[in-house]
Amino acid sequence: MIVILKNNVEQAQVQQLVKDFEAQNFAVHMSQGTNTTILGLVGDTAHVDLEKLLTIDIVRDVRRISEPYKAASRSFHPQDTIVQVGGLRIGAGTFTVIAGPCSVESKEQMETVAASVKASGAAFLRGGAFKPRTSPYSFQGLEDEGIRLLTAAKKATGLPIVTEIMSETQLPEFEDVDIIQVGARNMQNFRLLKELGHCNKPILLKRGLANTIEELLMSAEYILAGGNEQVILCERGIRTFETCIRNNLDISAIPVLKRQSHLPIIIDPSHAAGNTWMIEPLSRAALAAGADGLMIEVHNNPKAALCDGAQSLDLPQFEALMQDIKKRAAFEGKELQ
Image 1 (cartoon, rainbow, N blue to C red):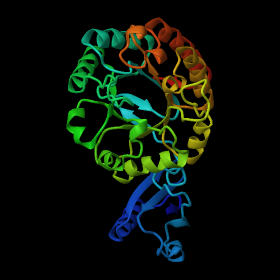
Image 2: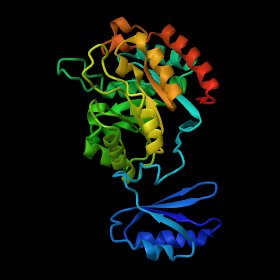
Image 3: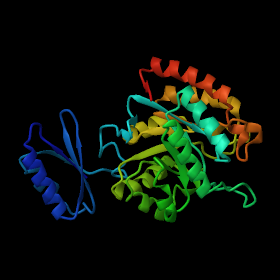
Image 4: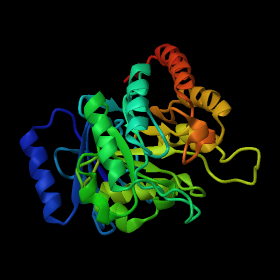
């Protein structure tokens, strides 16, 4: 339920109304725009008397939200959310590129890739320390050592780091991680999502391999409901009957999510394509469709990569992509972070 307040009301009146709602066991989220203040009520609002609320002097309108997700809904939060990470912003008006290898493999690899992607214009460094793999015999990542190498690369370059968490029990190990990634396989790991709702770090939430947009937003709702409002959505392609591509990148998800939700949206063309030659056109399409950024897999020697080398750009390829993206972002009126 949302309560829309009249213009130019006194803050003391607003705070008193918030306290009254909280006394009724509602969580209250306030969204203040240029001309409108909206109070979003989270809780069992089924028995709330709308007519009684409308008699309150500072209330202009009251509406029930029809979507099953509340905190993630644009009705609840009309203004775009901008996620702050240090001095960087992810969200409306900006375009952010996250780049790095699928998996952390060695100190030399991370030093080389981190320095190169920063020079090319990436704002964040990604790398998998813990790798969920289909086969138990595939490389599973360096785990704790991978986190240490990511942190060392962060100190050397100043790039904030993004890496994937597998379980809520790992949270203490992610103290130095700037953005915690929830992978496609864990999108509906509700125990993990609940714990991430109580942490104070931004969460990059990937869409599952066969999940709907509504299911993605419901997973985001778990994090938001816990009090963590720093959620970034990620479209990485969904599984269809098509066999010519690894996954089908759902470009249409970008305008749909922009209409339905206030959360920023990052596109991962690497996992969708499964091949390097598709990454550039898919990146262009994502930018044109209104995405807030890209997550690109980059490796200093893709042919020798221990994980997903076929979909990883080498360093010169990433540099060429960034030169193209910089021009297109400027044309779209977006600030490249």
